[in-house]
Image 1 (cartoon, rainbow, N blue to C red):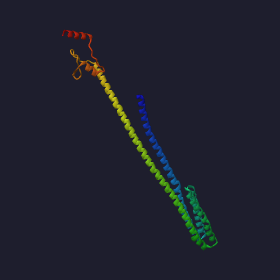
Image 2: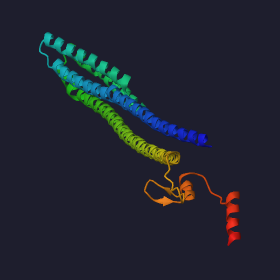
Image 3: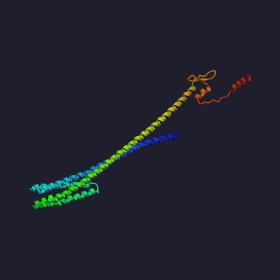
Image 4: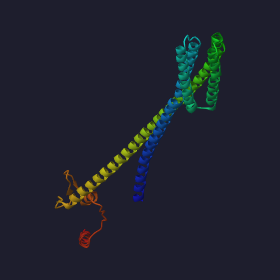
Length: 293
């Protein structure tokens, strides 16, 4: 039974420390998972909405450049000025398509894809208006080319810029949503981390207290057993040593100088018990004295 109790105590101690290890292991796993999630969200914010937002702004900027360059086209006073303005339009147009490709690749959500597709189509449909202006200039009808640029062309560019703003707003909204999600994940991770740390510390303190109490109890038991053993050894030494006994009354003197009967001394210093009787010689002696009386 004692052996089984010791085994159970050791098993409980092992399970307690195993529980602490599991808690801190869980803490590490949750922390790593949270950091991984935050890393993915941060990367998503950078690689998607922010990239789309920047590409959308750059596309809108180049569309504005194209519109200004078209004004330079209709106001050109020489073939060289016309060529320079048309070259600026072509370069800006190429950059706009590059930014649209980035937006198409990284934009998130069906709504965003639909806005990108509609805006791209608006941009593509602007080209026939620009070509009409260039044809009018080549045919010598500069005034009509100017009217188209300031009228229909400017209105179309206004619609195109509105669509670009919608695309930019959508990208920023997505970035804000992902940022809020990242902040919520961070807050949740902080709460879980704090909870697991508190539980781990509390259990560690409880187990440490229990272990210390058990050690103290075991120490007290050992000290008590040692005291009893020492007392028994002392008693054995007293009985084995020289015992001062009265030659007449047979009383024994203890280490404090007190005299006690032989029976009392032996009972106090050993496990022996006395049963009184009368030996044959004493019996004869006592009977003889009684007869004489």
